[in-house]
Image (cartoon, rainbow, N blue to C red):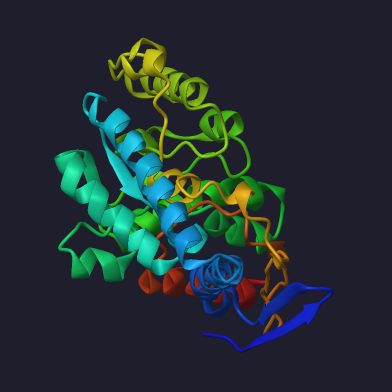
Length: 299
């Protein structure tokens, strides 16, 4: 992992990491979870012991009301992706344990590998927006830029030998992604909808499957869950149960900037804070790094 520089300016954290993307990207989860916990502790210091009791009593009540609603959803599959956005480590663990105990098979796991190991849960995750962003940054021309979003999927399935194939098509827009996608992508297990209405994106994906591979599947619009408006994530449970707006933060976190720059490799900087939740493993980062080096050598 790369070195970092931390400072404060006008009550705001300034945290910067410089180096290869494969070294800096691993900081994202740790740095954001630490900053969020510091924010939480700063807020909690202003509460009395009784105030803390009331805060967590309300939070547990709100959490339980959401779990009860989730229990009524047929064929539920929900996972925890809340590590970098969490109120605190202990609250995340409490939420994960509560969902595991009360949702049964409907709770499919957590992207927090430590909690998965500690509580004998499935460690689960998907690929992230920043992966196609990196290949796009090193693309030498427009043709390679367009192809980079599919090259990521090729590398992913080669790295994981056909497993973990949930794609993220909306980094540069789902519609243009599907317009250029080839038939082998239809073999992937499914898609993660992050930046588009899930039913619009779901119907769009299903129509593409029908046209590209002749797969007969119902439309997202016809699924029973549409009428229930039950689109939840465990991350939402972790955050919303503590209604953060009720405690104004004394310190705000500035966007974190990750920079690719070393030995003549192309440089690209982007704010990582809005990047979708992810479980990026070192073995795939190594594969991307090899692609970056190969691109440089062939330039």
